[in-house]
Image (cartoon, rainbow, N blue to C red; front, side, top):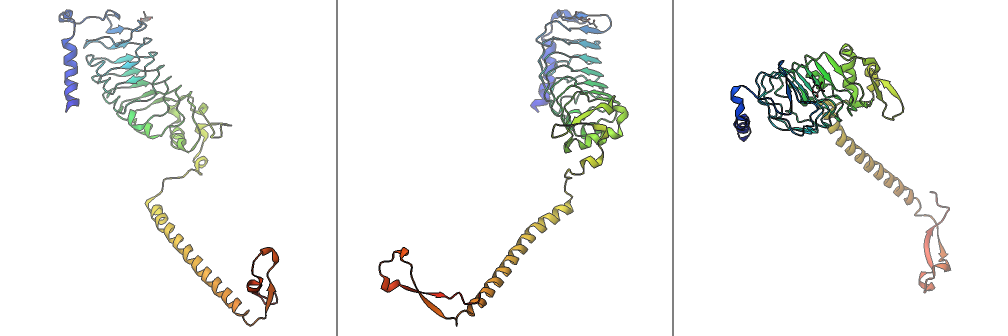
Length: 317
Ligand SMILES: *[C@@H]1O[C@H](CO)[C@@H](O)[C@H](O)[C@H]1NC(C)=O
């Protein structure tokens, strides 16, 4: 409840805090250059905060090459007509999950050359019309299927030059409109976790420019292998998730085999004991000799302990 309430308050708060000049239309932020072509250029202005912008007609916003390391909630909520947003080279580390609210018309988003390590799963949810997304040149070590799954119109995805060593093909399966994907410049590792991506690559080679030159490093870090050439057989050694039937077999067979081996030990042990008892019985009629205790034992009373019964070696063993 508080969540949706703040959503409605956010634009209201922004409108109330706007300068009075806006009555005549809209003002251009002092730091930016506003052209006639619905383009606002705020790039390379040493900005530390996203300027306050209100313009329903604005279509292109350039914010690249500033120092905007944080994108706050509702940063663009008053720009409903925005089609293209450039936000490259800002040292951007954090995007608030509500930062892109209101950008339902946005078609192109450039977040390249920033410092993003992770994304909130709901971040891209408002971007229903997005065609092109660049996350190139960030520090992403992983990409979760949920992060991009709302982008049903996405055609162009740039993920080059990140720190991705693996990616589940589920990320790409949720992008039905995808046409061009760039994956170069990542430290891909050819282990079991990359098998689904390799499978996807084999059947979508035409969507990945230079797919045949994509390399992954073997897990022993000694050889580079072309990812598109890794066949299903290359991952034969990888454990597949257990089917319910296999699970049942394992849970039943495990305790059963334990009990069986226990019973086997008991039977074998009692057989052995019985066998040895029989052997010893045969020794009873044997001659017993009295043998003196060796002196080294140092017993005090030789008269009492000087003799003990020992079976003779002549007894059959
Ligand atoms: C935007 O402004 C920057 C800095 O003045 C300039 O270098 C750049 O060429 C401009 N871009 C456009 C498209 O006008």
